[in-house]
Image 1 (cartoon, rainbow, N blue to C red):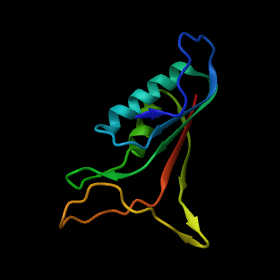
Image 2: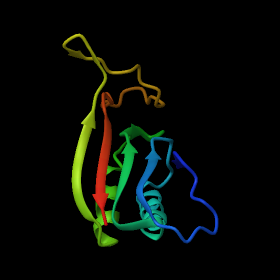
Image 3: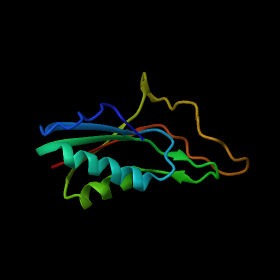
Image 4: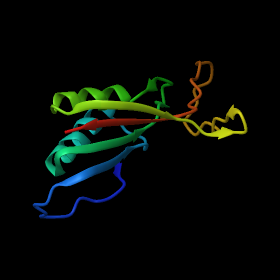
Length: 124
């Protein structure tokens, strides 16, 4: 779990925008989403916006992990209004061009090709 910008230590000032990334290899996407949401709600001003980048990936056992649902649930549980779910896909010409899979592969198991990044946008 990585945040794109560190929170200022001991700052009492609220912010209008918090950007977080759950693009890394997360052992527990649910816990990571809850943690990011908790940090954001402490830092956000009323009417502030949280933007979380996430992407599906496969576990080493071949299970598809999709943190987007966890982000939405954590945001709603923190009384944030869920504004938008944006799908960002790389495009070359008129074709969606998926990157080469970087996830571990398990022979004989079907794989979901990850071709987009989810951008979840809840607000205070």
